[in-house]
Length: 324
Picture 1 (cartoon, rainbow, N blue to C red):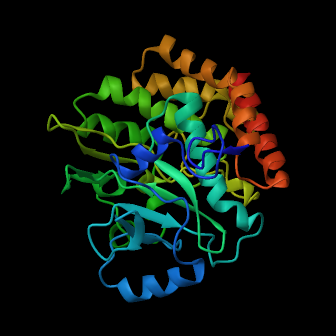
Picture 2 (cartoon, helix red, strand yellow; picture 1 turned 90 degrees about the vertical axis):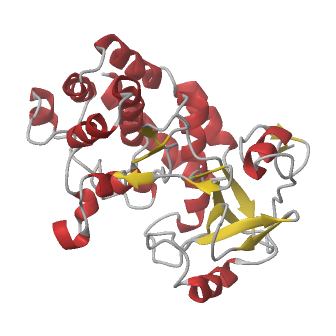
């Protein structure tokens, strides 16, 4: 028995379920589960397209387009972003990075109902896994307005310094959302769930550029589907527990005593956001009750067995913090 390389549901053959294939292909096109090139070719693709591609970040990435059932590199109008195993030195579980991001994104969408970019794992020609995600910044073939929270707060390396993505707090992220989003009461609950998810699943890279707004079909701005979510501490166990502090300067008594965030800290953040506290409690309770579903999805993931055990242990440790 195989499992779908997108949803992780049981499948009789390697590849994607029909539902996953339609989501990945954006219609009734065929979507391949194996590429016609290898990871070594990605570096060459990137060098050739360096002046034209718009994908940011230091991770090895390449833009792809689906052409007659095959995924091919694209200098412009790319439909997908492919992320192979990085060439950079990674302390632990380097080969598990694509499976880690895929699992994290599937956990967000399947277990917690968080809207995410359509994603999957895919094999290179030699069988090695990579992570692939479908771009969401186009609608009906037209690029739509989108800005991340660094852009919205006028943060650049020139204005704020080299670590500009990490300057600020999640409290400030809420203020930025309120300033630009008319549907704030709805969107703030989505933001809160994202922040809790990133904490529970040890994503220490949930910085300002990993939150974005885009233009809805009605012309207002809402949160984009979640992207770039990964259990970073699986690979960098000594990193900080969050990319940003929860608050500008406030500290709860719990944080002063424990030196890490717990349930009361997230409830205080919800209070700062002006959320309905019953709904904030419900969100935290959903995480507290998720153990069985999370364990099941980890078990079906493409992580190595040692990485699965490590991932599950980190989840359980963080879950105790927000459940108490």
